[in-house]
Every structure is written in structure tokens, then in C-alpha cells.
Image 1 (cartoon, rainbow, N blue to C red):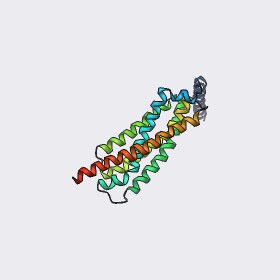
Image 2: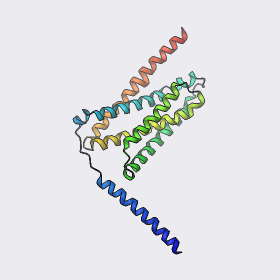
Image 3: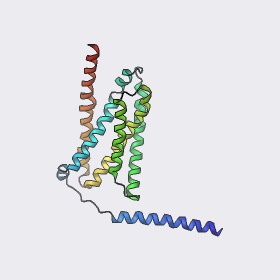
Image 4: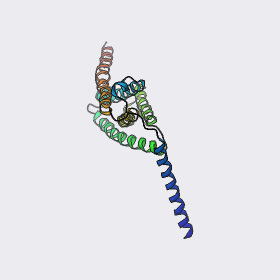
Length: 208
């Protein structure tokens, strides 16, 4: 009985020690200044963040918007993209939840910056794109859809949080609106215009 009480006291002491470490880490963290919109837009870090978000939206939206043509081109049935769109959507929601929660947890408990999770989401997105570029068969689209959707959702969760960490909250709404342009540009330039151009060129080459 005494041994059990001692173990409980030791466990309580460890939990209190971990809590004290977390509180001390949060206390020692240097708060970042609120950066005005004009100044933030002129910083290299914002340009990098915007381009990162643009590339993530481009890969995710290009895959999602052209799934119907992709499925039929590799031997799938007409309308077979429905299941892959559903998998992408489910993974997208899971990515937003998990990346948001995990990045917040490790930031405050271990001091891991959110940009590390942004890099992880980029690696996952790159892996899915590389699999498609290598000529993934129809059966692999289940895994690719989950991977691309998870990475896409992770970016949408982490990028706004990174922006608030870097530039504060005074101009956050305006900065978030600017970041939204990355999604619009990706949808038009990559998912529609560029993908359509390459599809038309491939169709013309096959017909020749």
C-alpha cells in the first residue's frame, strides 16, 4: 500500500514538473510585435509563406478538380472519381484537425515551431504529387487521395496560425485575406488553365 502511494506521489510530481516546465516555457517566450499590413507584405518571410501556400493549394486543387479525367485516363469507370473525392474530403477534414491540434500541443510543450509542421505538410503534398507524376495506377489513388487531402487540410490549418505567430493579430484579417488569393490563383492558373492546357496538348498528340 505504501509503495502504491509512493508511486502515485512520484507520478503527481512528474506531472507537476512537466506543467511547471510548460508554464516556464510559455513565460519565457518572447511575444512578437504586431506587424502592420504594408510592412508584412514587404517582408521576405511573407512571400515565402504565400508561395508555400500557393504550391500547396495548386497541388491539392489540381488533383481534386481533374480527378474525373485522371480516373478515366488510367482505366477507371466514368464517375469513378466519386469515391476518391470523398476520401480526399475526409482526409482534408482530418488534416485540419490533427495539424492544428498537434502543432499547438508541441509548440507549447516542447517549443516545436509551427513551421516544422508546415514543412511536414509540404513533404506529404510533394510525395502525393510525385506518386502521380510517376504514373500511379488506379488502385493507388486510394492512398494518394488520402495523402493529398491530409496535406491540403494541414496547410489550411497551419498557414493562418503561422501568419498570426509571425505578424501578430492587429492585421491578421487583412493578411488572411491576402493569403486567400493563393487559393484563387491556384484554382485558376494551375487547376483550370494549366491543367487544361496540358490535357488538350496530350489529347491532340494522341489523336495525331
